[in-house]
Image (cartoon, rainbow, N blue to C red; front, side, top):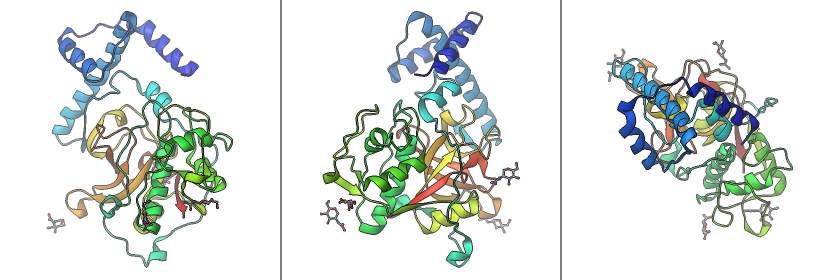
Length: 334
Ligand SMILES: *[C@@H]1O[C@H](CO)[C@@H](O)[C@H](O)[C@H]1NC(C)=O
Ligand SMILES: *[C@@H]1O[C@H](CO)[C@@H](O)[C@H](O)[C@H]1NC(C)=O
Ligand SMILES: *[C@@H]1O[C@H](CO)[C@@H](O)[C@H](O)[C@H]1NC(C)=O
Ligand SMILES: *[C@@H]1O[C@H](CO)[C@@H](O)[C@H](O)[C@H]1NC(C)=O
């Protein structure tokens, strides 16, 4: 837990003295706590309840607007209900991106100019099932392994779940920092220089960083290089269509993301050049009539199957690089 996290709690703690809780939500609060096995000290409970009430209010308001056809996606309360977006970002997502290193460019003309209107690599067997990072900033490791798993499947016909814990524990000397943060670029460098990554089966995930236990005997996948995509949705689309699942940085700008349920996600607060979370883009498509322009990226997240569309999300596509989805995208060469 960082100092800033404590400060956030302290600041809220001071504020909570003047907050009044809504007694009509008592039963719902008790139910929610039971469902997600939450328990608090007496002082902390009031504070967490007030954060939860704010989130509940926001979700209700959003879904009401949605029923009037305004938003295009719905939200629901979930296990993150007692967190502010600042706390969420600090414990679930944060990755620093100091420099954007542009790589080889992939353009439409390289594939004859015609890309499919929709792509879904899950249906082709390229994608392992959704997992849960828990309270560890390992999103970058899930996304990088997801991209390698896809390319290994393409090459060998075998879909093997790779070890996220291996990347969390062992890519520190390359510049990552275990459960605190990580950069997908550095994770690819680690796999490349290390001469492999183990499978989940031999090096299972425990969501806490520990000493590196990599054993070359159990190397389950290798890469011979990796490609950074240019910052454009066109390049990302061409890569997703022709290569397979791609790891991509995105911006989580508000608590809308935390409570996404279904529909095509968009967030007016999103920037198109900041990234603080990493996901796996496994396809793209559109809702309704193709000419309506309701295009989306199909994104695999690492918050478990209870979150969103069974662990997946549809994110707005072709609207000025919404939430920076094309700003920090990579894929491995195997
Ligand atoms: C897939 O993995 C299994 C078990 O590790 C192995 O026996 C088999 O040969 C592999 N198949 C291919 C096509 O590599
Ligand atoms: C990856 O490369 C290393 C070093 O060349 C080798 O020892 C290892 O067996 C390779 N792993 C796989 C899965 O081919
Ligand atoms: C889709 O939109 C086009 C152009 O507006 C229209 O001609 C077509 O009938 C629509 N298709 C469907 C299935 O609604
Ligand atoms: C980011 O958004 C601005 C408009 O808000 C747009 O001009 C710019 O092209 C976008 N950047 C990318 C990489 O799409």
